[in-house]
Image (cartoon, rainbow, N blue to C red):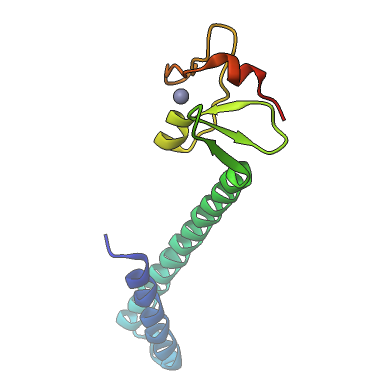
Length: 133
Ligand SMILES: [Zn+2]
């Protein structure tokens, strides 16, 4: 599949052709010219539709990344305990899950400090339980 830039350049070239053809509007009674014109208009419509889809997808990606940044911008790694913490947040988060896929999984204190998602067990639970900001 051609890259997005190549497809967009193709769309621009097609628009030029379409505009040239529109200037020969008198010749549109010629069936061959008319069919070519209609085909180019359809191709252009498809390219614009794909552009819209791509813009929509990119906007979603931007929103997701912004959301991720909001969740992680105050994140600090506690080297002693091997967990992540945030300002003003009493919870500790699994470093393993964060490094693997960027997700913030709060660590449960109930049965030792074990991540409920990846199962990683963290050392030194008493210090972690005592910690709160
Ligand atoms: Zn985990």
